[in-house]
Length: 435
Ligand SMILES: [Zn+2]
Ligand SMILES: [Zn+2]
Ligand SMILES: [Zn+2]
Image (cartoon, rainbow, N blue to C red; front, side, top):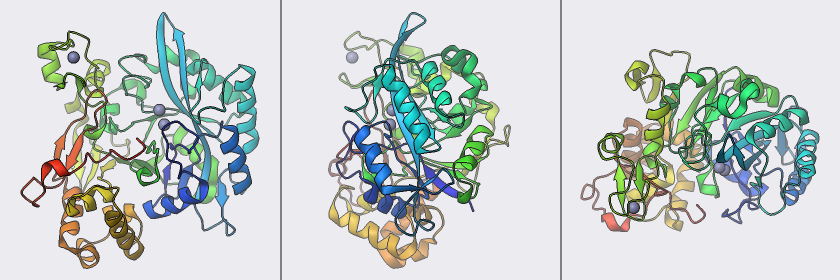
């Protein structure tokens, strides 16, 4: 049976993360969202690691079980994100990478290797290290030959492997002779798989998607579906990522990401790629360089044009006719956001949360409600407005205002007026307390 995995999250030991991020809460919210396998995040942090060891059991598959039943519950995988800050080939580099480990012993070996390089692991769940991305990959593989190494949110300007400000122009430039051991690329909130399909170097890499949640409600906002059986555990996951056998991904609208367009936040300047071509990359107001967004950066590094992909949308699943082996993806809007907009209030209010839990406890997980449950059934539980919202999301009938230079984009379901929504009252959808 296929399963849904969210393998990039953080614990309450990472900076700017919710204090609610503990194991029982994570398991509860994973269930609400429809996630079967959840990353632990932050396994290098000594306190979080001790908590994981005492609360989760190795079940022999490489996945960790929570709760006394074991089999039925949510499975966890040991995951961590590491921020590497170093100088390479004459430039300052800041790159985030994800590492997954098949058991506590390998995780501990990796921890020791970093400590022997004088890394500080106790102050931030997502540690900042001076070790290069390539050295990290090498250390991870020495700790376990089954370690999975994935470049986080690959396109964000400051911390992505392909970032315009402190990244690289190719995987090869960064990982050299170890490039083949990088099995996956995370799209991040600001890019979608199709943008990554334009890079030839990524043709033999899995394109995966995870939430990078810093709070419980954001779990699963992006996720990857695997065709493997959950009982195949870590080895099934490893094979799938390594051999590009993933079933598909669930995506945010990339326009909602903080770095979709090029711009300068303080001056309110935002350019589409066409506008950047016309006006250049210098801010017309303050004269400083603009932060080059993800779209722009893809255009720079792309080895094929968007039209060459022959994108098609088959009942909400986006695929490439040119590259049929590339698995498709679905664009969704979080259910809390749909309910909030229907109620004309913020996604963080109790009223929204109550409606969310009512809908899900009756009809199944969020992912099921967003993709499978009939619109009539949703209307019976939550009324016609919310049902219409889900229908509009499935049809992609939305209003989109792209993000730039650290400002989240906004996706709206109804035109103001259409729902009597006062535009100013609706909060930006991703402005959760902890992001
Ligand atoms: Zn990151
Ligand atoms: Zn992260
Ligand atoms: Zn400016």
